[in-house]
Image (tube, one colour):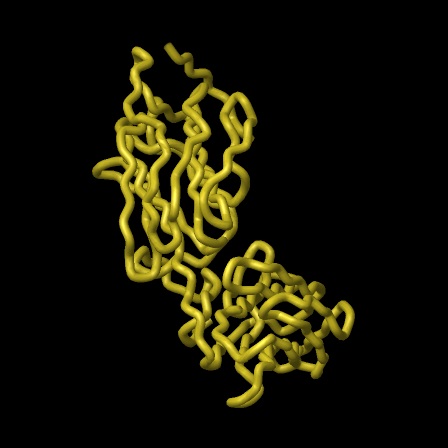
Length: 298
């Protein structure tokens, strides 16, 4: 029989841009956008018991639902590595990003130690949500890991009637060659990092932006027959300022992403992105920390 012990661990945009949370109405029919850790308190007097896990696909996000009896537990959901409760052993999941779901003061067994839900591997294989594995049911905690196709925005909802915790994970926007624009609120835009990464089928450019305010974003190809992407981040307001901290040119030599040349134009920053060929791209605005991501298809 398992013994439970209480403890505390302690913009408006065109198609192709995932905007910041503050630019979207808080409504569950819209895709989630934040990648920051999400936490919530318990709505129960005892230990809520996990009884079922189900999932569904929506137009712009995938949803997984954890059903409980006895209320809903406290939770923490964040990107990280799934590890075993009590063991610390890391577990590998399908996909490029792992979302770890911790339920506190919760259990997946009854008072006699009998399982109320089998913690077996699940294979939803949806657009974003690929797999579910478990870190265990141990001393008042239940841990799950969601294997995602990519690091995307997510949100968590604690609902009643019946008690359940809902995790929504956004779909990736499609690759396209049309221009992407979004208004911003930042009066001072400072980019202090240019990074790149290779992924299956695409390369990723990351522009690290200081502060939490959103810059204006405009991304397009330089001309109809050009393979150079122009990425402009702009400041807003009566005295807009923009500055770049870093080398003028950053080389990558990836299959799709070759190099980036930065130019400070006073109220905006222009990044000329050299690609191997004119191909589809997508733009994502992420928070905590603030960054603009441009994925270039191979």
